[in-house]
Image (tube, rainbow, N blue to C red; front, side):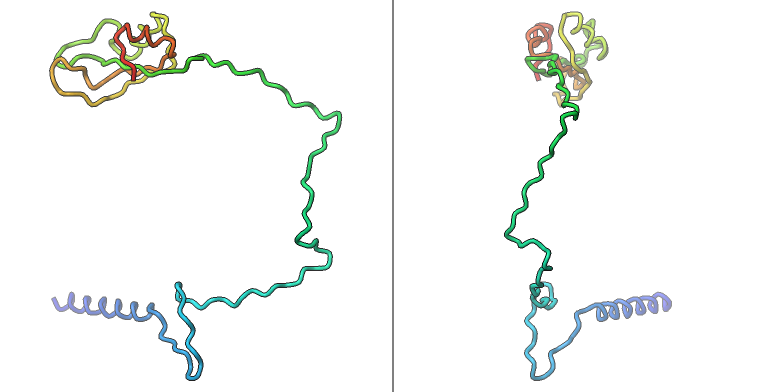
Length: 171
């Protein structure tokens, strides 16, 4: 017990020493001189900078230099023109959803056993699929409600009506 008490006293003395050593210096102005005004940072301000004369060959500050313009020689190759890009989905893209199954029921509808089958079913119906993924949504936990797992497919906007007729929901 005595050992712990000694260690405690040594640590306390060390902390007091550190606080007093790292504290602000107690310097005061000598008698007869006004004290410097404190600043926000606690440091005295630097003296004002003095203007230095410019060298004789240095241009005056009001002189504006002309902008550099590149000059190309006649044999310099011309910039190639690129063909315009073609948007494969001119009407844009939309996301559609379909639940994987129904809660409290076994299995899924034919053609929707996994993401690849769901995508193949859309492709077979002439719906252009840009990308497909699985997602989890918050749903109510009750029998007859859709499962939280959903197929999420991005299709061309022009194919939205066809997807809706197959039971998909626009996101």
